[in-house]
Amino acid sequence: MTILVPPSLQSLPASLSIEGAVSIVVEEGIPIFRASQTIQNRIETLLQKQAEETLTPEEITEFDRYEEIDDYLGFVNRTIRNLYLASPSAKSE
View 1 (tube, rainbow, N blue to C red):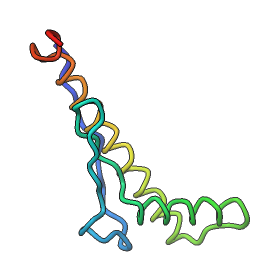
View 2: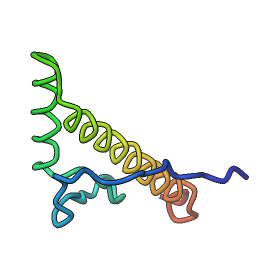
View 3: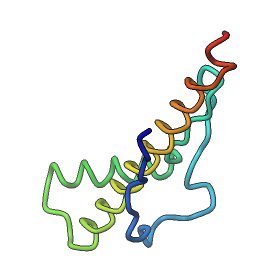
């Protein structure tokens, strides 16, 4: 049996509002955790700026933190999906 270890989160971006930072949708009966639309918009803004010019050190740090959060949410989503798929009720459907 493999023990899953979640990715490490060093800190959250200072610009991250904890309230409403993550949305939950249900796909095929499985809850999926995603960054909120506000956070996705901020990441898109940083990506656009990065393509056009150099990010400030603060923006680089912020972007790195968002990448860590994305890794963490991906881990949570994979774990939940794998647990669901391994459950007896999922096998009988």
